[in-house]
Structure formats: structure tokens, C-alpha cells
Length: 166
Image (tube, rainbow, N blue to C red; front, side, top):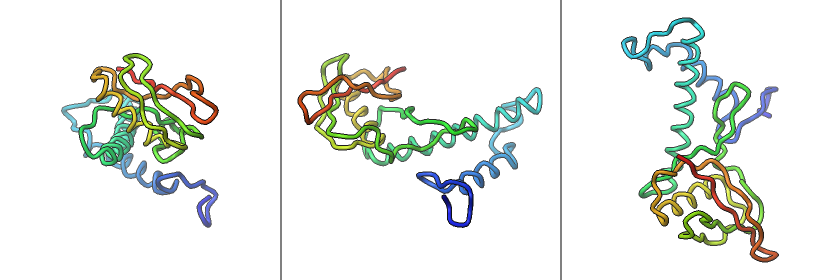
């Protein structure tokens, strides 16, 4: 919870920061949507356009964070985020995706076996997805959406594969 508020905090910004951002976008989306590019048919269409614009901006923020962490050729597109009750993407890159000692393997092309990592975050898995894409050369399937537990190599290491789509 935020101090002095009944609104919960969010991982990368307080709820009030997100609300301020939503209000900023909602106040005058016409600055962002050029009249000649989009003609809403109704107030609902206009609201949908504002919502889509806000979603795109929040997703772009996460992608930029990922690209900064990769600091090189980025093939992966991050799509493994949840959404809130308003349908807005939530930045979960710093959250632990799976607990334990984990090893990513490419179970489609068999061209990538990652290093063992402990308690990887979604950011860590997205970086692994980028490495896997670079190793297997399949740049068509680069939307990192989730992971699947394959099993355990031994009692100490769980193997997973990353779900990447097009």
C-alpha cells in the first residue's frame, strides 16, 4: 500500500503515477492521434483508441527496458506481461518468473541450452529468449509469451522451454 492511501503500490511506479499517466493520455489524445489518421465513429471508438494508445505506450516502455538490459542486438519482443482490471499491461519484468535453479533449453531447434540461473525474473527469461533466438536463427518467432516446465535434469535443476510465437 502507498503511505496515506488505500491504493496498492505497483512494482515499477505507484498506482497514482499510473493514474496520472492515464489521466495525461486521456486529457488530450488528439495530440497523439492526428485527426487525419483516425476518425472515431463514436465516443466508444474514441475511448478504445485512447486505451489502445496507452497500452502501446506501456508495452513500449517495457520493451525499451528490455533492450537496455540486453545492450546489443535485440530480436525478442516481450509479451509475457499480465494486464490489470482496466486491461492495461503491467510491467512484470522485475518479478521472479519461476523459483529455483533453472535452465532454458530450445526444445524446437535443439540449438540452445542456457546457463543455469537461480530464481530468474521475467527480464532474465526475456534475455534468455533473445539468446535462444540468436542461436537458432528463427527471427520469425520472436514474441516471448511464456514458458513451460519440461522437467528436472536432476534434483537441483529444472529445465524449461520458452514459448515464442510470431
